[in-house]
Amino acid sequence: MSVEVRDGRIHWIGSASQWQGNRATIRVVDGRARTLIPGLMDCHVHYSSPGGPEWIARFTDPLPEISMRAIELAETSLRSGVTTARDVGAPYGVSIRLARAARAGEIRAPNIRAAGTWIAHRGTYVSFARLFEETDELRNAIKTEIESGADLIKVALAGWNEGVRPQDAPDIPFDKKLLVVAVDEAHKAGFKIACHANDPTSCRIAAHAGVDSLEHGMFLEAQDLEAMAKNKTYLVPTMSVWDAMLYYARAIDWPEARKKRAEDLRQGSRAAVTAAVKAGVKIALGTDAGGGAARHGRIAREAELMVECGMEPHHALIAATSSAAALIGESERGTIEEGKIADLVLLDANPLENIGALDSETYGGPGGI
Ligand SMILES: [Zn+2]
Image (cartoon, rainbow, N blue to C red; front, side, top):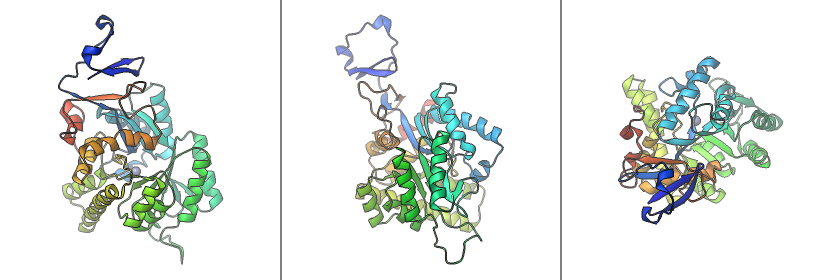
C-alpha cells in the first residue's frame, strides 16, 4: 500500500501501481517491509514531572525547572512515536502553555490536549491541586480551568490525607453528588472530564457518575464495569506505573509495605483490564508517565501490558490510536484515511505480529524504565 500526503493531509491511499501522480515532484519515503500506523496517542501523561521514584516531589520543583523539563519531556514523548498526548494535570497550569507552544510550532512536541491543574477536595490528594469544599467552589474551579485555557477537566477522587479527616466524614469526600455536579459543569461548557480513581470507593463513584474517562481504575468490579459500558466511560488503565513502581521498589529497596502495595495495585489493575475487556468497556491507552514512577517515552510498554492482560495486539493498537482519538476528541487523527491529518508513524516491524514493535528502542528512540 502507498499513502500520498499533500499539505499535511492524507490525499490518497492505494497500491503504488495505481498511483497517477508525477514522481519527479514528490518526496518518497520507502516503507517497504515496514509498517505504517496512525500516530500513537498517550491519553495520560504529565510532562511537568519526569517520573522516577520521587515523582510527586518533582511537581513541587521551581517553576523554571518544571517549564524547561516539560519541553524536553514532550520531545522525548514525540520521539517515541506519540504524536498526540493528553496532559492531565500540571502545577501552575504549565501544560496549558506547553500545549499552546506545541500548537504554534514553537517546540518539537506532540499535539497536546491539556487539563490545567487537578481539581480535588480540600484535605485530599496533593496540596498543589486546585482545592474545593462546596459545590459552588467546585463549579468555580472548573470555570477557572476553562478560562485559563484548559482543553479538558481533570478531577481527582481520593481519601483524606493523613490526620485531616473530620469526624464522621466519609472515606471519599468527593462523593457521587459532587462528581455529578462536576460532570454537569464540564459537559455544559462542552468539555470532557477525566476522573482519577485508584481505590475501591473512588472507582465505584467514578464508574457511575458519567465521566468521560476513568483514569487508573484498579479495583473495578462487575457492576462498575457494567455502568461504565452503559455510560460510555473509557478506562485509561495506566498499568506502566505499577511496573515502574515495582522496578524502583526492588532497585532502591523500598520498605516491604510499599513493595506489597505496588504488587497489589499491579494485580488490581491487570484484573480490571481483563474484566473491562470482557464487559465491553472502551479502553484508551495512557501511561501516566510523570504522574507516577513511569518515565516518558515508554508507550510501547503499556501496549505490551495490555496484551499480557488478554487484549489482542490489534486492540492494544486501537487503544493507542482510534479509541484514544475518540476519547480525546481528535476526529481528524487516529486512523489512516483519505482526508485525515497525515499523523503517521512508520515502524520497522509489524505490531500486529509483535506488539513490541511499537518500542522506539527498535528505531533508536529513548529507552529505560
Ligand atoms: Zn496521572
